[in-house]
Image 1 (tube, rainbow, N blue to C red):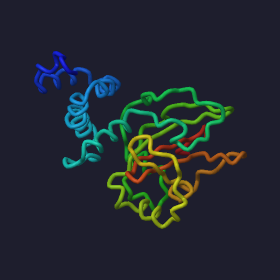
Image 2 (image 1 turned 90 degrees about the vertical axis):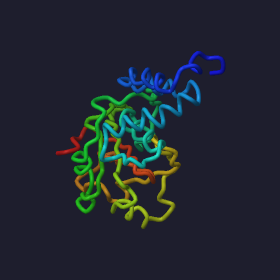
Image 3 (image 1 turned 180 degrees about the horizontal axis):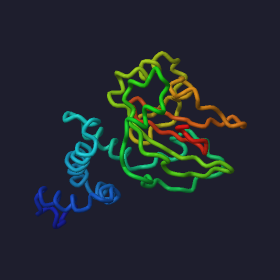
Length: 224
């Protein structure tokens, strides 16, 4: 931004302008690409403040700017088919986009997803049905979520008992993690979730080392 008028404007004034644009998170995402100053202001002030207000139980006062950025992205963005564990047959033509529905995360929804022995783990999920993606003759409703204090959960301890080869080479949609685990294969999801006749699971979910969850369910009701 050399020579820009914004060099003469204080951070307080710039932030006041940014807060006028908070209703659509795409505005902040675009501003973050303008220059390093804008990115720093957004990461350390706007994104962190927004998440602290919207999700006080999920973001501690000492949380890093990166953690806040990931939480905000998780709250408002659809993970896409690949990150939800759906092998694309043909091509998923939808570009990265804002998630449908309210941008909220609920522990009640997460509790219903997990197997009984993991119900005390704090998994927060978005509202259903999520974003609809079509593949051949099947529709997938994509969801996203977050384990609070993931490294202290029973799910994390269970995953660490698995062989390292069980990690999947699909990076997280919300942070820089390069691998994820299949929660269904680790028997962390409710046993009532079965399979279609072609072997496709009714529900699938994947989690990264930072506790970010991406998944998909099909037309069979998730909470039947």
